[in-house]
Amino acid sequence: MEITLRDGIHWVGVIDWNLREFHGYEIRRGTTYNAYLVIDEKTALIDTVRAPFGQELIEKLGALTPLDRIDYVVCNHAEPDHAGSLPAIMRACPNATLVCDAKCKEELSAFFDTSAWRFRVVASGESLSLGKRTLQFHATPMVHWPESMATYVPEEKLLFSMDAFGQHVADSARFDDESELDVVFEEAKHYYANILMPFGRPIGRTLDALSALPIELVAPSHGVIWRRHFADILKAYRAWTAFKPAARVVVIYDSMWGSTEVMARAVVEGATIPGVAVELRHLRKNAMSDVVTALLDAPCIALGSATQNNSLMPQVGALRTYLGGLKPERKAGFFFTSYGWSRKATSDEAKGLFEALKIQELHAPILSLFTPTAEVLAECRAAGRALAEEALRQAKEQTQGEG
Ligand code: FEO
Image (cartoon, rainbow, N blue to C red; front, side, top):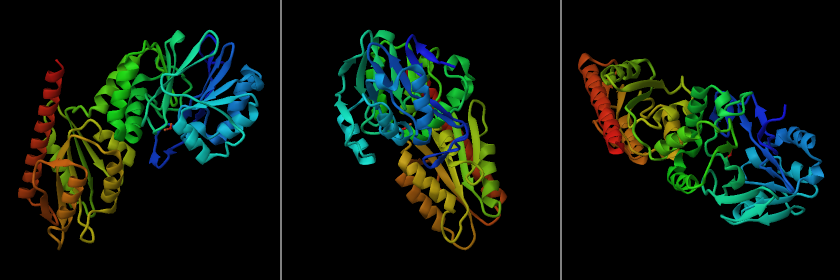
């Protein structure tokens, strides 16, 4: 079935239904690699797909136009999920010129043998006429790599936004208004948290620049195309890029013989107050990608780890590494542990973790010798309540500031 965004503008992407791991993190619903064909007096392919799907893309293109009539292949982003099949496409389309920015050309030449490719290097703001339609290129550095750009078609008020506003959802629906919207937004948040979180500030600047464009359709490189709900996803992006606090507390922990888990549940009990959402996440029973998604808009976290070999448990170390790369901002919380014969080793390590991740310490570490006593559990409940009150305060302050 042909899928058109506008007359002569076709979705020619592929659906990767069974993908559950994406460059090192777990995803839940597969993904799509979106590519688009603009047929005008000149014909342009906007982006390609991951390498194993190159032949499927070639067949889709061939059904719409003779391959030797493709004049341009625009590469908005050199990452292999979009550029991986470029060698096959450039071989199949003998008259195509590869259009990209200077940084992208450099990166593509480091990935592939590009010696036989014709390049047209474009700068931000430059345009390329296809006849009735124009492609306008806008640099979007760090959305998601340094070379990234978006391509805008002013005559159609259409933005090919690359990774921005994407979601890892394999779905037969191609447009937001045909899809289950709560799933799309959940996956857009998961995508943002795991891929774009470290680049919030450059993305915020990009949103400012792109918001000046009249936009009716936004076609990202993953997931559904936004034609009814772009204002809503833009609003969500504004909140995520600024780490706007929601009234949310996340309790993350790993436990060896169950004592740290008992403490975690006491923290949750204390944090459960009206108006605050509380989540409990065991680090070995939840995908790391889900844990960081829960953290994205939670200003307050409690982190627990049993003491194992005088150290934090391994999955807490993995969380430190993963979050260290994602660089969450505006977080506050406290640490709790059940220990055996080394009272301070783990809490000292946790202090380093809080410092490295710039998490403000709201309460001194709570330490329990083996099974937590009633006093320790009361302390966990009190600290949990204080955490929830702080999250509520921050969320209210945010709402008042916006009002
Ligand atoms: Fe979907 Fe940054 O690639």
